[in-house]
Image (cartoon, rainbow, N blue to C red):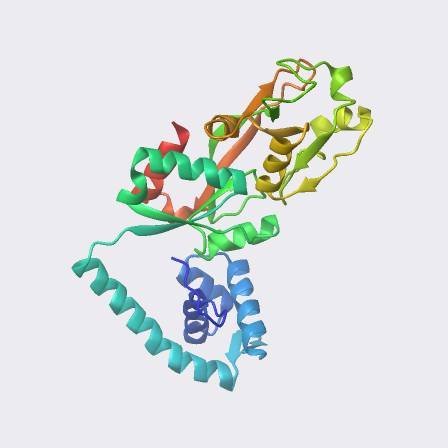
Length: 300
């Protein structure tokens, strides 16, 4: 569960500070918490930035807490116990819908929401909160390690011993435009593609204009994309208002076509490339019944 305060403090950091003080070791704290040492280092960095204090001083046999760290420990120990007791009481006295935290790109958020609402899983068993503030692959890993994210859905990133991954689906790039495009019918030749205006939707982890397998096509074009944006809404509204082309992952097309007057354009010249989307989670959640059910529905 991810907890934050109005002042921006991340309450998920509390167990890290408590455990480091009690073990006098960042390595030992990682073992107790069941996370990688780098996750502990990441948490300490966030604590240091928040309090503008070193908090822990390295020694030969571990770390020594500063006076501020000891003071925080005494306060946080009580808070942590209160939170644990409240959570235990809530689980006994009240059945609440669990909130699942997911990181995915914006169009994927729509696809996930549509499938889980249609299945009834949302809102019967859970609600969703999408968090897309991870800037790098390392950020994605750290948020899984720290249990800030339950599921990360996207492309592969470097392996981590605390993260498990499985294939969700495979997709290919698909070319779309508005149904009333003035010059494009059901099929498109490479020559015509090279002269048509287009926009490019890309996110931080992959981009339709820079993917290696599409470089040859991009280089051969006579025009750069008119607009490149991480906002799918911006790109989709543009192709609805104007005669423009846009690449999207093929998986997204059915849910977009439900409400938008768009069409897919057949292109024999596109590379036959299968790209894998995976779901990543903390290994401690491997047997989580609800998460397994969500993944099962998304795979259908």
